Image (cartoon, rainbow, N blue to C red; front, side, top):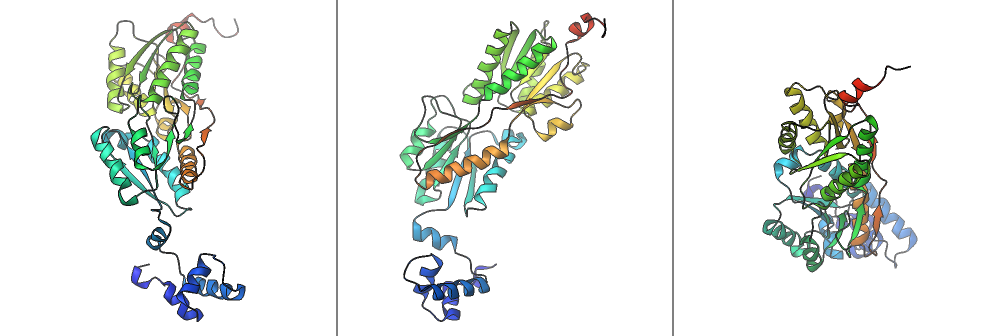
Length: 350
């Protein structure tokens, strides 16, 4: 409804035959209004289709009723990464019913990112922020504290933090992938990892190496920026090796799908010649050929929980540290015993 057509408190007061002050008291459920008068005012407000002005509400309580999400990645990487659209959908699921506005910004890590946070804090444009992609020695944590913003982190910062956090054990999913491949007979694995400076990428890499070592497997790691293009580059480098791995564990589905493409263009058959696993279990991975074995996470659910946790922090609640369920492994057609193991296996029934 255009602002000029939206009914105001003055319209409600005139129709109900009371003062604007009394209407304000009644609509904000304050004491001092007779029950029958309050009922009449609420009925009139409902009849006129009155709704509160967010701007007026913000001014009256000193809040922006907005929350910020600053993503410190390349726009190209974000555009191709299905995690963030699902995560943002989860944020909106919660914010849309609680009268909040999501302010989204993309900024390069460093000075531009710091200035973006300062801009959001200026004149209370947002009440709080959600910090994703935590880093080693993350400079955003002291900055957000200095700016006086409520915050929730995805993952737990190094050394803990005063802010609320929502986390899940990324390593659990990678361990399941390694155990699955080891169970199929693979002895030579590689991990196409995310940026070393991102804590969740480091957790996945460390879990891969620990799980491979525990199973007595040979393991190699190639670092990427999480993009499909860099995943393709990493795959090509691994397949160029004279002793290439028989299976590759990727740190997201985008890179895994790119890896399938690289392998197939080289004449390899997935999974006969190369088994591949992803991470995030995106819809795209379920429809490629072969369908992708992937670690299943609930990005939208993360968004809902993160939004609720941030709103609790904005309301003055004590910091919460919520741990979501461990990821699970969705096994599909992109993994199978290596060709050498399949050839050595006796015929079924012997």
